[in-house]
Image (tube, rainbow, N blue to C red; front, top):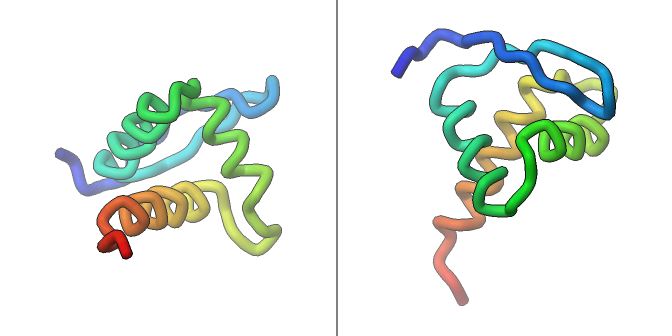
Length: 77
């Protein structure tokens, strides 16, 4: 896998945008979308809407992926 960010196009609520992420983040984002039965554009739009004004979309996606992985790896009480 490439460790350098790669640009991919997404459509968020009808508007095209490009996001640069490293391959592992793209892979995990696609797996989350598949696991939750949502198109990747829909998932990215939800992440976009939830992010703060001081957080870029690429960073918001990375944090979303990290939180998802942490939640799945956390020991169940």
